[in-house]
Image (cartoon, rainbow, N blue to C red; front, side, top):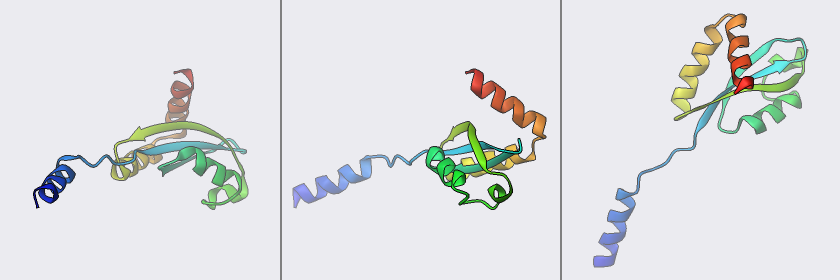
Length: 102
């Protein structure tokens, strides 16, 4: 009985570590930028390159993953995505330029 209660306590004391989520920007062949979220942006970019995952890339294929930003969880990634989508293209290009220079 004692080992069972110790096991239960150990499970409670161990904090749950959530998998990070990312907000990302992909450049399309026509120069436009697509913003999205994923728990694996490289895999998601590969999906976009195959023309899957977003209708956005049906008219102009995905050519480069140009920006990623790690977020604490999915909710934070969604909030950050909304903020980035509200930016003008020039501001998004600044994000990309600063990311690539790091």
